[in-house]
Length: 216
Image 1 (spheres, rainbow, N blue to C red):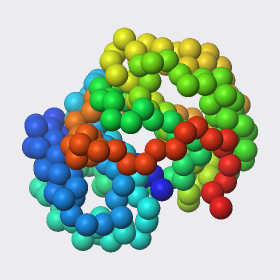
Image 2 (cartoon, rainbow, N blue to C red):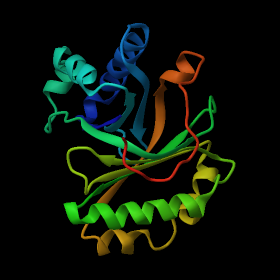
Image 3 (cartoon, rainbow, N blue to C red):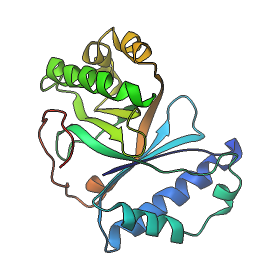
Image 4 (cartoon, rainbow, N blue to C red):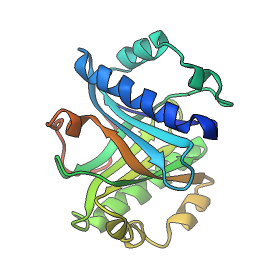
């Protein structure tokens, strides 16, 4: 299961928010639990915006930790409360232990009727991409568990130059396919500020690309 959390803080609290998030993620890495991997990104265009991407084997475990957390002054001052979203993995590809400088996260929100056509379209993206360019570190396509018309597509890149290949990777018809399904999307482009697999000097088990199918 993948957990996605988008957050935005006041501009004057950016440094404090980043420091606190990194400290908390480092502590979580040393603690026992069901967590597989945590990544934390800061927007390139709006430094006050952040995105957490976590892989957990148990939603119950994550929710217990989230509920028990101590809310900092930074979090209490946020205009919008932190709201985790839960996704199932449809397709994943990763080059193990390769540093990821940049990430592009496209969050798609659509009605239930968008689930089938978008799954078909994203499956075609996977087939079209193949192994992807050498600069591609991570490719992840997920469907929201509680709202199946919603998806998140994540690509991670070794450098800004490698990220330029995303246009050919995704295809020029992306906007048209999203609109045809009655969905919308927003894009987060960020820099890696924390990666638990690199911090620990190890990587979690990665799967090769597989067809987009429902989890058993």
